[in-house]
Amino acid sequence: MFEIRIICDPADTDRITTALAAAFTTGSIRRHPTRDGDRTRLYLTADHRPTPADWPTPEQAYADAPTITREIGWVARTARTVVANPADSELARTYLLRKAALLDRIALHDDQHHTPTDTTAVAEEAALLLLDLDQPAVICDPRAYVRQQYAHRTADHH
Image (tube, rainbow, N blue to C red):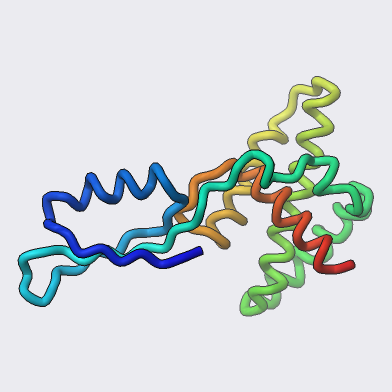
């Protein structure tokens, strides 16, 4: 990730921000007038857009995952702890990640067995919560993001 600063004519800001968003995954854009008030300063964080090869497959991401039954138990127990300790942001993020991964795994199972449920929509919502926590204003496949983060977490804990 990197920070971009641009000083431009105010009439060019929309064109510039659109071009940057097309080239990079960008965060929120902060606009400020220059000291002389004639131009605009733009500040934003950016990162290279991930390629499909950067996303692990579900099989790769969940290779070392606990069984779905065990993960349901962990998510249920931890939900109470997260509610009781809202200041513990690390636990809250781990909870959101594992819950989103659990729902993704259930949705993948339902899709594979052609079981009509709303699990896919619920998995997408949980993935969006994690993505918004980690990378507000980033546009990518939320469930692929969950798989990537879960694979990183698993690799970090071995």
